[in-house]
Amino acid sequence: MPVCKICLKSYQTLRYRSSRVCVCGRCTNDLNKYKQVAEKAYHEAKQMLERGIIRRAQSDLLSPKPSWIHEKATRLLQDPSSEVERAFPGWVNGLVADPANRSKIFKIIRAERRGLLHLDRPHRWGYPKNWAEVAKAIRKLDRFTCVACNATGVELHVHHIVYASNYGTHQKTNLVTLCRSCHELEHKRVFDKGENMANTDLVPED
Image 1 (spheres, rainbow, N blue to C red):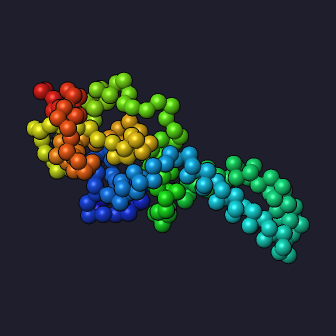
Image 2 (image 1 turned 135 degrees about the horizontal axis):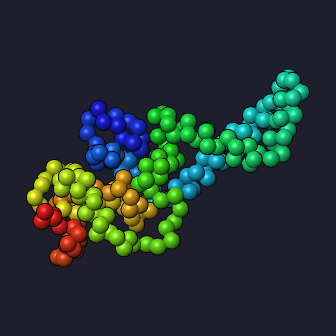
Image 3 (image 1 turned 135 degrees about the vertical axis):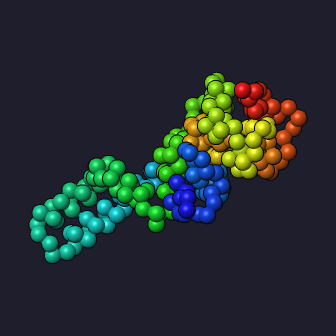
């Protein structure tokens, strides 16, 4: 069964599945609901690690352990932030790789590492100047087929899994090809006449 790359759970079907994207419906909804860049999640994870380091050091000081352990615990309590910076990369990598960790923090970190979500607030909003080329490449990667209903030979749009307005990136791992009907269903509205009708969103002639 396919595995969602955000929650690491197996499903019979995924909301978006392609050669580069595997995301379930719940994670898609959650990431758009969070409306949060990954920087805050990393900060919260560091705070979690620091609390653990402090608790462990305090426990070591109160236990009948060798003096060198007490000395180490004392040093850690004097400057826990240095130990956090040293231990954080390996610690967070292990937690993110564990399928049991499916809370908000870990979903956001995985999404950032998969290229779906910005690490921090973008300096500029809106679509990149080369969006026409980006959209064309995505449709080609998806074989000019809607990844939701498999429709071909129809008007094709390029959709952000995590919306750009919710800090989603313009990277190919956050972009999928949808037909107009599936795109409207995703946004729960009918597009106005002329909306998303630029040549970049139409099925190519070649």
